[in-house]
Image (cartoon, rainbow, N blue to C red; front, side):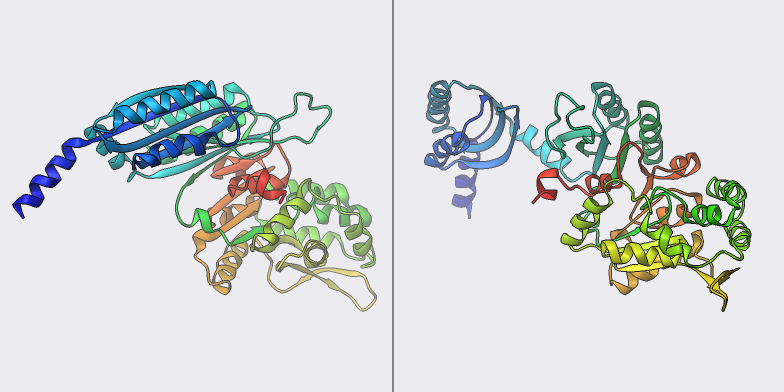
Length: 418
């Protein structure tokens, strides 16, 4: 036993930890050739990271070797990188430094995503400042969108998104979230702060509001225009969406104003609905990726079912208008109203039906009656939302279409286009 202890102590004295940083013009096979040098000397790789920005490589490798071999390894690496016309630097890492770094790996990890038509240095600087003030450290920054064109007139529908992976325990998580949301409003970009847990990586159910979320209108307003009561209904709608009056009360009043409208106009309205930018792309990717999708709407089932059939949603829950024997709306509804509380209940019910944890759910909506389901879901996203909703939501998208949700889920453009 004593001999083994002496041997272990000797091996520990001989081992050496070396960090190499390599920069320069990238080319195929570069990483393989450098790693082959380490492989010949039996080195163990403790950490590795590589990034390529405009054909320029940045590669870091932390490896462990025997100090009797390290001189030969560094010499070969120096000759090889010189021949490749790239730069290399070496740093010896003490075991104390390494152990401190390992211990930090156990801290909480968060993902911060910033999104917009373009990303500016000011937006990144202010985001990074909030991260620093909260005592967190940025481990990596990744671009999720494709490379930006120089002339946005050629590609006017461009998107830019980068993702920060940060580590540590925030001094005040609520304050951090509020600061980031305030920044997004001030600097006109979208932002998401999520704890990087197993649930974030395995979202499975996404529930959407319909009016002003999946479509660019409020269907009840369209019906009201046909009934000649558009201004009256819009005034009630706006007040309800701002949270100024009770949704059930406002819904009952608006439906009553539709009395006498011929039901045939519903087909006409459905076929001309203005679809939210990015919906087709969003649904195609979600379905291909195995997500279950639902419409939970304070609007009407007729229009929800139209979207379900067109875009392959799995579930629709909305309100049913009563139709009289003469084929005209009676000014009443059938069954319970799908209001904010009901949306929250339906979210939980669908999670149970799909046998998933509530933290694996996502909710997307714009109005005050969406807040209960946004707060209940594992990820609640305010989309082109009213000020009250933005103020209370944890994450927000206002600068681009609804396919921006994909970036908050961690999708890259390279994955989406496959």
